Length: 252
Image (cartoon, rainbow, N blue to C red; front, top):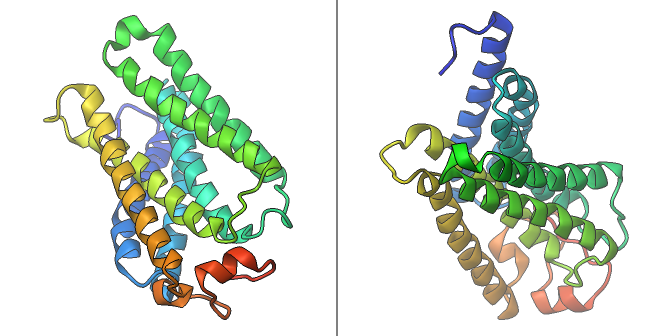
């Protein structure tokens, strides 16, 4: 809804917010269907990342104007997950590439956004009824994402291919948040309201778990990275990547 009673500037920003979110929602299935790391994957992946950042930026305008602070907080959450997936490609060797100010700032903002969701659920639990559970779940996940990142700034994952799983795991998690918002706005036939919000999290978590296990199994069995994704440098087996420092693979 474009709120015809709102000033033209607010309506324009809201329209941009909706268009960017819709675009992000549409391109991901194509990104998942094409060859990972290939030209189409990279180009549409960049469209998705930019779309999610536009969603977050516009939420800082329309959220406060309509006093819909949950819209702002969920936009921060989904955009932070997108940021994590994007940064995983830039920090393939986190032990040699320490987290920068943007990494720290994003993690702190995400944790604060999660605390804000839980705070809203507690303060307004009487008015929100069953929706409070949505705020508790999503808020906890948001805090967890920020806290986990800060922990890994000090204790980077040991696996040389951790960036690969961080990339697609966080990108899929961000997409789950996008689908959740779409479901909440459009799927009014789903009751109760908490189910309308949380079913994408349940389904998406199962997909991420299965995909991660599938790739890990293939790699552990000796599959070469080039068999699974398009890479920039000479691929190595999973075992070699685990044992040889300095080997770089990538899909970016």
